[in-house]
Image: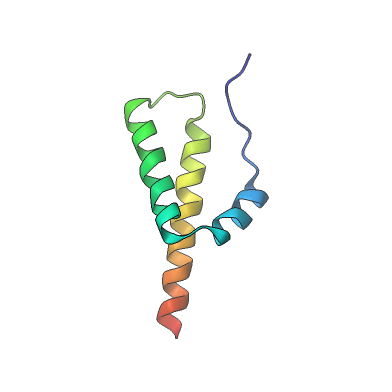
Length: 68
């Protein structure tokens, strides 16, 4: 039985748009901690993708704020 999660990129990119900044930062911190204590987790790619999508959303929001 595989423990690896399947990452739905389209769904997650929509999900992060609805998350608060606190939620985005929590996911980044939480996934980072998982990867630091269990670097060979079967869900390494899933955690890494979550970090990337959340960080991208934070950057997107900061860019939009700076344009105003």
